[in-house]
Length: 143
Image (cartoon, rainbow, N blue to C red):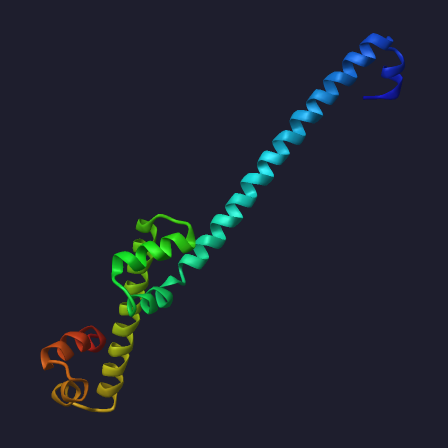
C-alpha cells in the first residue's frame, strides 16, 4: 500500500490494517509450509517408487533362502510398503526379465537365419522345436 494512503488513515485503522496483513501473512506461511510438506512427500514417494523398480535381484536372492510369502513380507517391511506392492513390482520385474530373454532368443534365431542356417539346424542349435523357429521367423521374413 502506498505510504501517502497510510498517512491518511487514523491509528486505529492502521492497527486493524496491520492485523489483517499479519493474519494474511500467517495464513500464507501456513499454506506455504503445507505445500512444501506435500512436495517433500511426493519426492519421498518418487524415491520409494524408483527403489521398488530395482527389487527384482534382491527379491530373487531372498527367494533362494526362504519361501515367497516370507520374502514378500520381509521386503514389505524393509521398503515400508504393503506386501501387495512388493508382489506387483516382483511380477513386473519377472515380465521385463522374461521379455528381455525372449528378445535375445529372437535376435539369436534371426542372426542364425541370416547366416543361412535352415529352420531345422536353428532348432537343433537352440534346443527349440522347428515349428517354434518357423513361428518366430515368419514375421521377420514376411515382406
